[in-house]
Amino acid sequence: MKKIISFFIAAILLIGILSACSSAENEQKKTEEKKKIQIVTTIFPEYDWVKNILGENPADAEVTLLLDNGVDLHSYQPTADDILKISDCDMFIYVGGESDEWVEDALSEATNKDMKAVNLLEALGENVKEEEIVEGMESEEEEESNEEHEHEHEYDEHVWLSLKNTTLLVDKIESELASIDSQNADIYKKNADTYKEKLNKIDDEYKSAADKANVKTLLFGDRFPFRYLTDDYGLGYYAAFAGCSAETEADFETVVFLANKVDELSVDTILTIDGSDRKIAETIKDNTKTKDQKIMTMDSMQSTTMNDINNGTTYLSVMENNLEVFKEALK
Image 1 (tube, rainbow, N blue to C red):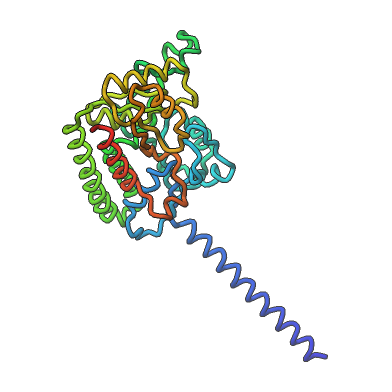
Image 2 (image 1 turned 180 degrees about the vertical axis):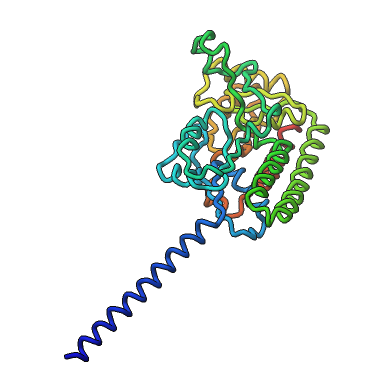
């Protein structure tokens, strides 16, 4: 009997030792995971910029893209899980416009008080532009009181569609990352500089295309998120709606105005953005004299999914593809 009791005691002790070891290992694993740098981004361009700055990722940082299923920035609502990810991350990157009004509450609940929060609009400062309504464009504000909006400024959120803006934002992100992980600061600086060289190369190609263009105006049968890009290269534009508009159908006056502009300016290409059903562009085309314009799409990167990323889509690849459409539209 004594031998049996001794056996059970030994077994219980062994189980206790193994459990203690397992518990210690779990705690150590949690501690190591916590030490890993956590970076949360709202939209695809931010995510891709971070990936390029990290390069081979010497700190094994984890990067999260919140809008990873094609949800538009303007209609996105964070989940409880999203808020939790933001709460204890080391760096949070967001656009900072009207679509990100939820961010203030999320940051106020953050448990990591040392978090580096990068607001793209704030980082760009005076380079940020107010959203504008050009001739012929439908405006949601027309339905609202002018007095109510007399002192309000709605900024154009689509800052990532300017290569010039992007070089500035890459510098800001690299600087904040270096402050979090000073041990690898030189690597991040080198990666950022290499990436900016690529950005500048494409920027030069856009400028060259604009300088050589026969047509100096882009015409969108759609929303227009490309104001920063057209301003960068001194181009004009017409569009059905402003970039942040929630409208999806244009009235007949807008369609006729844009169709007349196509005829007046001898525009051969009517543009749309990603996710468009092209109905407005088709209707504009049907109301022109020749009815033979091409309809092409420029990608505003507002519907990029993680599946696209896994299949090789990058910020640079999108801007290069947009460049080809840009050239065609300016012929």
